Length: 268
Image (cartoon, rainbow, N blue to C red):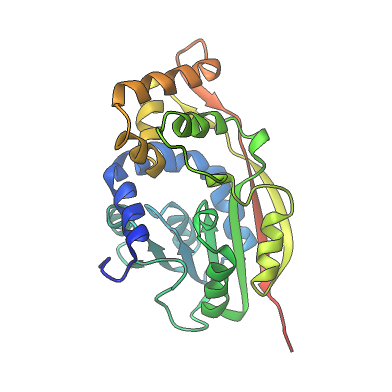
């Protein structure tokens, strides 16, 4: 249940719930090139106990389960966890906030984050929780956007922000994207980064309906729809996407993610 979440966490969970089916069907698969490398960095194998923090609809966990791992997941959105549960009936899936993981100390061999850590109010605090639940010989792996300027999907995010009556401050999903920032956060949390990879992840949408439903399936899209007329949002998104529209009517955005693997640092 979500009663233990604070007000902002409940609000974010509600936004992800609003169009969770569209997110799971249309946008979550676009980052599939990252799933395998993320699990590789976490050294996930048949015997691994894996926690995905911000697991959404369970795509990464499904890949870990395919490898034979025992899987657990945490998310703010009950709708996405229901989808994950349908996919993984034996998974331990819980509603919760990454700053207070509802798991015991040393419970996992691998803790992974895909496109979630950058939304933490305090990412060092959040990774401190990962350190607590990770076994001393475990592995951490974090994947998120690389630098904003090399990601074409930034134009979509910027468009959503631009139509708001009071645009938010900060870099949003690109908050930890500049070179070296993620590694520094990981180090400050008591980990030692051991490998960094850059992973191409183009987003492709078959037509304008696919494109719009996918974008508006994100929590930022749902947040905008609660403040701005849908017709205006749609018009702005179609205009932003026009230069990425191909002759067959599909859309393709070239993107790059960064993924870092790390081990708990021995403080003794």
